Image 1 (cartoon, rainbow, N blue to C red):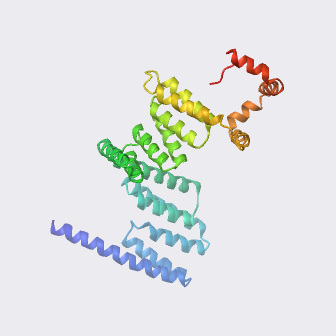
Image 2 (cartoon, rainbow, N blue to C red):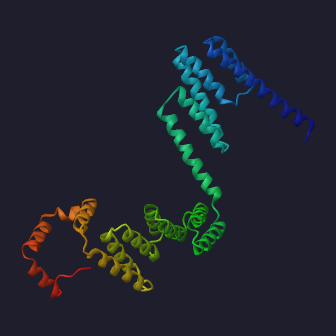
Length: 310
């Protein structure tokens, strides 16, 4: 290192330390409501270190107390400029901190919007920095090994790591859904199945796993609907037996006699917006009424194959 450079860096460090001391003196004066004295210390601190936006926000607090609102706003905007500079340097934590300090003294939509944008940008950059398909695949394989050993919680951690490394790989979501199902975390499993399907609508296994979860939740109508969608996508018929087995199992469960079966069916129907929309249709209400009034005729039509169940 050059001697002059070392001297400069040491001097800058000393100036920053002196600036902090001046700022602390300003804080003490502020607490005593000695505002003019506080301003003197903050001004001195800013001269020593014009990169520390917290000095500006402290000064803005004094001006606010003195009811010098226009000056207060100018100082807050100056602090925002420092925050913007940190954004240019990709120092998002510092930028967010100074935006936050500015908002504490002068809350405007512009500053709030900038702060929120930087928070989103920080998350985006962190994801981009962490992205690594190769490490994602290794984590997914490690999850597979743990799954085979029935260590479902450990497998979830590995699949989650795989997703963090590559959030566009559908297999990781499908595998994690299988773990969540084993752990009886059904809502999480359904969410992962949906994400997998959104990434790859032809991922048949995700439909199969989704249907299995819906069956476990006793959402039989949804289970059958998912199975039908899976059948449509299963053009190569690789999952036909699996899908049909799930549908058969679901239909058997639907028609099992139990004291609470009717009440349970009504409750589930009332919570399903699509079913309620169908039931509220005047034509459908008329058909249902006819089914109740004349069940033998309906049965004859079903036996003749004119009316068919799924």
